[in-house]
Length: 212
Image (cartoon, rainbow, N blue to C red; front, side, top):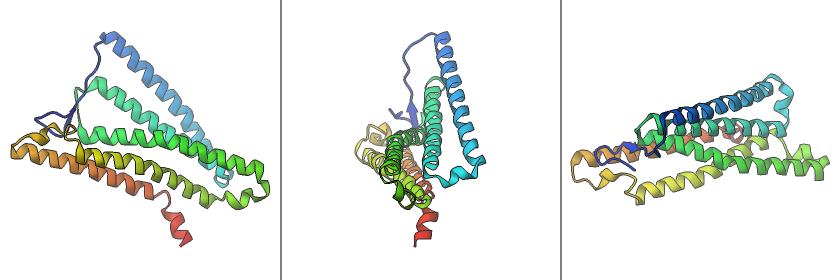
């Protein structure tokens, strides 16, 4: 819910709880997050250290899933901590973190589906596995995973920004300053969405260029 005096600020509402309970809860969440990300980090380090893994589509898809999990865990923990540390948070920053969390959440089942397809081909068509599951196609599929997630997420964001003035309460204000702040906030969100789309294109840029 946006503040009527500042369109770039979002109020964060939290249930009442004792300070000691909040500290313990946050400590447990952060500790678990650090442990899981450390384990995931060692997996990525192992992947990078052994060149043979770079030539296997199964390991490429697996390490992409690990990286996706790291981003998802980091963004969700950041949102959780922000709800306790800040009473208000910048709308564009909040939306950027949420978009990353949603992207990675959508990516997980898609990545698992592609991994299952690769295993199916390896078992049912072993003689054609090397032909069908190439490194180039693997990276293209990873780009498609992000593209499919972006279609769902960015479409919802654009529709919400265009049709839901509850998002920016200051939109209804008559003052020039309020209208200006609302426009800046909306443009910031759209800019971040466009930046994310450009970032996703880097996954397939080299391979598309190679194919052309």
